[in-house]
Image (cartoon, rainbow, N blue to C red; front, side, top):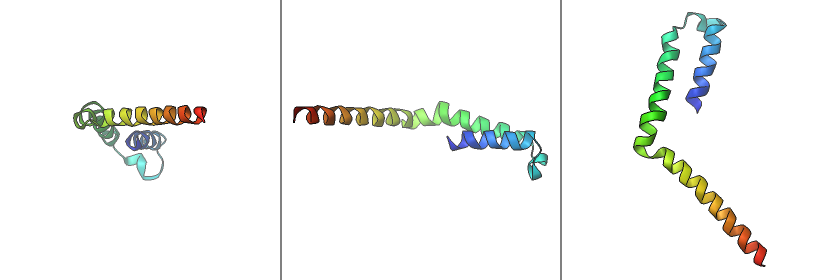
Length: 74
């Protein structure tokens, strides 16, 4: 997610020609966007990072359900 924010900030700074970013090549922004695309489409699924995040969220929901179930019985 930080790379997406960086792309948005760099795009805005380059577009509005702020300070030294006025001379920044658009290729830097395009390169970062290509890197973000490669990360989210290929690298993250390759290492299972997307599944791990989903699994962690499911585990938190399951623990909350179990906790709520035990609290109701008491």
